[in-house]
Length: 450
Image (cartoon, rainbow, N blue to C red):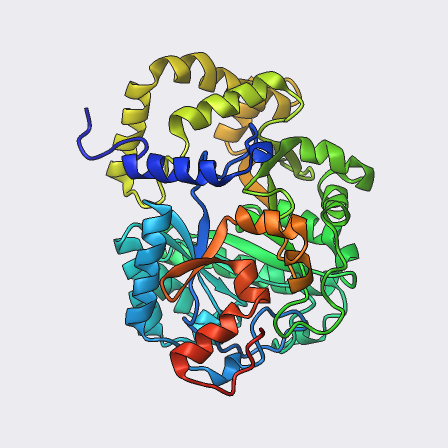
């Protein structure tokens, strides 16, 4: 009906099937999104190994600031390899060290190239370059950048201004607000879309600050749509003893305290949990943030694992539309894709999707879906999507255990090293990053782990 606009591309379906087949049977659950909606996630290496901060937790090796960035042509080859693995609209992180230190024209070229081959690039950054160079974010957006992630936490050392003296996470709220204002302003100035996330390294030292961080993001969901908490692993040049002290249960207890106001409610929050591969690696809770005028924001998960009817709907939705993406579509193509979905699945949309959406609004609106919908449409209530993520990298010691090998076999986050995709944990912890730099630069003096 709409030539060239399929709800889900055939290549995407094939790659999803391959990813699903790589999962162990115990992890092929209704709330598993790897192989159902995503074929994986990938990152570049060598794009800019250098960084101008000196963070306590850093997965780069000690040699990184000695190594020059790889040629644009090599990064493009990596992007093509990633495109083959992830398919249309695959997620790729432009990262390695601080990529905004790369010449602006080259970064713009790589953003445009990634989008041109059918990937969705996200620039991973500490954000300091945007503070020093006003207008850079807007120029990247005008060059095609639609996604960005800004890393903010107290393990980071070397920022300028008052944030350089932050002793606890509460001391960084002004910095988070500065970046939130920067994102809002860039959208306003350009009239363009920018999806923003933030990453947070978590250690025993700043674990107590997670609830306040979470409360801040709930109040600023108009600027950021995702926060990813990442307990430090003992890899790279991470300060000795800093990594490995925060378990998933420790972390989600503190997240629940910030979201629901009570640490014991961790299990209640995780009723909305989704998996992206092995749950010891990645888990997330997607939801709606409802904020009525004058009230505190409330978070409502999109589904509950203890509701069989809701999990049946999620499974049916992924069976039909898993892998569908609008993120590379312009307005006309997005409209055509919506019409194609409606024409291809009218019974499911009318009989399942719309009733489910209404039940979700009822839950979020305290049993009054029609009132919430009216207040939302008239601007009296904000309703925004938000995603809470935890991602847990492994140390060498963890990888060498049987559970670590199980996790490695199902890795969803990979890096193209010399044309071969490798787990990010192997790159971080098993010497693959150092070997890559040594081999590409001919630096025999680099320390490569055996």
